[in-house]
Length: 392
Image (tube, rainbow, N blue to C red; front, side):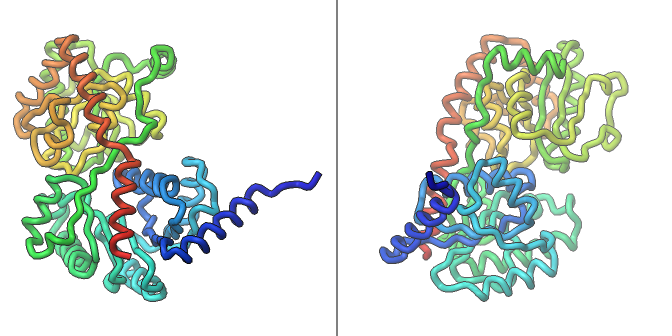
C-alpha cells in the first residue's frame, strides 16, 4: 500500500484553495507583527485571534513576523499546522530604532492586495496604506508619571504616526474609544470597537479536578490578583485592604500572580507577610485552576483598557471585585462588585461583602457565567476579518 503524506495533501489542498480564492478575488493576505505573541495581555489576544481566523476563513493566508522560537511554541501549544502560518523572522526589539527601520523596509516589499496588522501601536514609520492596528489602552498618556518624560514623548510620536497613516484602528472597548476620541478627535472615522474575549480553556472544573489541585498545591482559602506589576494596577491598594480583611477573615490568604512583583517594593504590615503568596507567572492551564479554586478575583486598577482577568475569572466561576472606572463597568455589567480603587475602605467592603455572604457569592458566580457569553474569540476574529476585508 502506498504511504500517504498527510502534510503534503494538506499543503496541496491549501494551495488549491488559495488559487481558487484568487480567481474569485476573495483571497486575503494578512501580514501580522507577531513579536509580542508571548507578551502578557496583548500576546494572549494575538494568539487567540490568529487561531480563530484560521478556523473561520479558509481564504486567508497569514504571514507572521517574529522570533522563530515563539512561532514554534505557538504552533505546538495551539495545535496549528505549520502550513497554515508562514513564518518571517523579525527580531527587532519593541520600541526600538531598528523596529522602525526594519519594519518600514519589509512593508515596502509587499503589494497593494495585502493587509498589515499590528497588535500594538508601535507601527514602523513607513507603513503601507492598508495597515490596521489595535489600541488596548492609553496608560502611557493617562499616567505619564509612571513611564518618564522621554518614553512618553517617543510613544506619542509613534502613535501619532500610526493614527495618521493607518487605514483602520481597532480599540478594545467603548471606554478606550472615548479615550481615543479625546486625543484624536479628527480621526474618529477610522475607529472600530471590537471587544477582546475569553478562551474556551477558561471554564468551571469538576470538584474532582479542583480537589486534586488543592491536594497538590495546598493553597488554602485565598483572594486572587492577576496582572502586570505596574503602578496603575494598584497592587499596593489591594495589599492595604487585605490587612483589614484579615481582621475579620483571618484564615484567608492573598495570592498575587504578577511578574517581578516584590513585597519589598511597597509598604506592608509585617504580620500579614506570611499570608501573601507571590507567583511570578503561570501557564494558562494552571491559571484556570487558580481561578477555579479562588474565593474572589480582585482587580482594583486605576485604569484598564479591557481587563482580561475579569472575564477569565467569571468564565471559571470565580466571583469578581473590580474597579468602577474605565472599562470595568462596561465589561462587568451587573456581574461583579464594583469598588472605588482610590478608596481602601471601598475595596475592603467589596471583598468582605462576598466573603461573608455565600448566597451573594453564588448569585455573582451565576451572573458571571451569563456575562461572559458575549465575549467569544470567534466573534472577535470575525469582526477583525471584516475590518481587514473592507480595506483590502
